Amino acid sequence: MASDNYIKIFQGSFIESNRLVVELKNINISPIIKNEMESARLAGFGSANLNSICLYVFKDEVRKTNDLLIKLRIQLIS
Image (cartoon, rainbow, N blue to C red):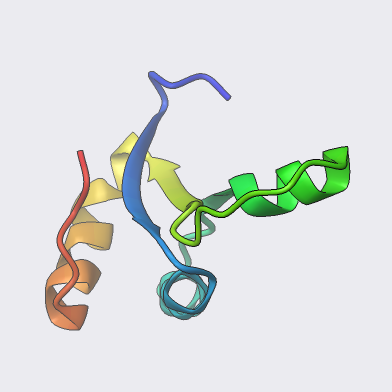
């Protein structure tokens, strides 16, 4: 993933991130989901970090995403 094309908008739990993914898809934004816990499980390692899911969006979608985050009272990570 080229980091210069994407902005990290969220890091949190599985439940919180799934809700945000649904809300983003409702406004036609498809986020990139990076799940460290699932990646560790698939590789055969354990992970105790419960807030290991990160969501990224394209830079040109940040304004629309930020409007949604404000509505949901979630602070943008940048």
